[in-house]
Image (tube, rainbow, N blue to C red):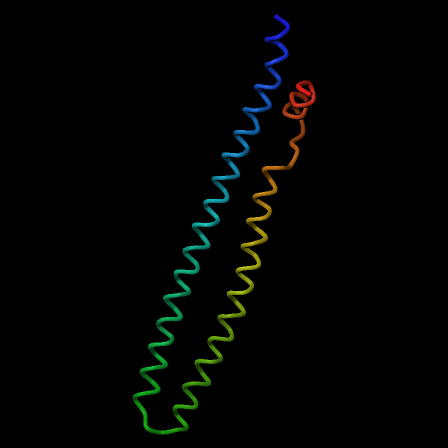
Length: 118
């Protein structure tokens, strides 16, 4: 009978950890899906901007207008690149935080069950 009572805290701890792992995996997956959507949208934006530059560049014979088109495109690329870098850093930080939740020690009954098992 004591063997069964000793196994219960271990079983509870394992189940609790498994639940936490599934929750973290779900949050992690949702964040990755969000990031993929963002980057696919950025690919579309960059593609559209490149086609617009191509159209503007080839629709005029004036060197000044071509230079202006290139300057406008370069300003847009610089602004989008800064925004993309910020998003990438925030996403990496968010994913790291989500992943750390898996290894964070929970307080309360879970810790008590883990301590009893140890």
